[in-house]
Image (cartoon, rainbow, N blue to C red; front, top):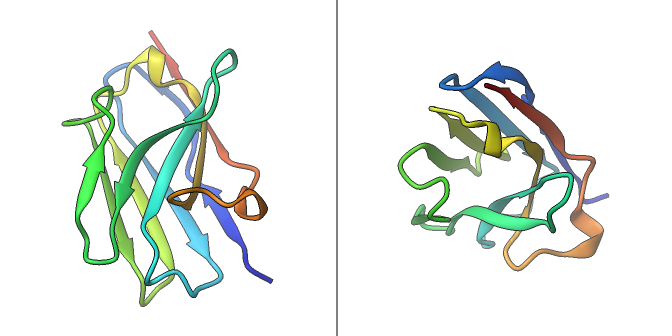
Length: 114
């Protein structure tokens, strides 16, 4: 069964850092992978992508603060987040880009306090 499982979320003060992980069941080495997030009032949006060759791109809201990386040998996708802001509070998900409905997991919650 194909699965993506996110972890690493938590509560952190503004200015702090978190490292999110997405462990996959494998088989995504040819896919562009992405991190998405959804706040309580917002729709789910893509914030970072990484191509099979490692090219990364970011939404302007997180560029310079977040770093996406992948290790296909270990079937893991990582999002390093620094200088967190209260507006980064959201549930974070990983998926391919464009996303597949059947791959959405439970996400991991990030709460940034001011």
